[in-house]
Length: 184
Image (cartoon, rainbow, N blue to C red):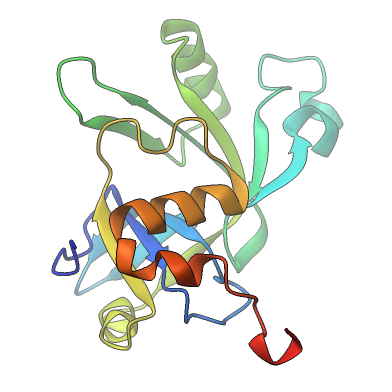
């Protein structure tokens, strides 16, 4: 179990099954920046809104970004749109992350790399100095490095459930527990 992994840019924060904060319940956050002195920034990657940029904003309706899926990125500045993309490097199990990029740059990247995973996020998740470390000490978050193609073909709650169960088998039974066991 990789419970001694410290957060770093490009790692995943997996919400512990005991985390009941509705902003982060059953979420997976891709950290785009982490610094113990300046805090952390990331986006929730498993909360699709069911919309794409073309339906969210008519400005994108007929352009190359029209079909980019939109996700709830986090509870901070929910009206801010962030564009991100990533792809796996063929020579290793590493990936390249492009975060907070411009529309023009994203369009260029999409033309250069058809295998690029592209997403738009409304809002983001942010932690002040020391806040994420404190939440980790309280067992709110599990941290894993992104490796291989662990996110391929997964989305929504299924992504959280699968990554949690495959990385921490001893927590797998909690993945399907009801949100409120008193209502069971």
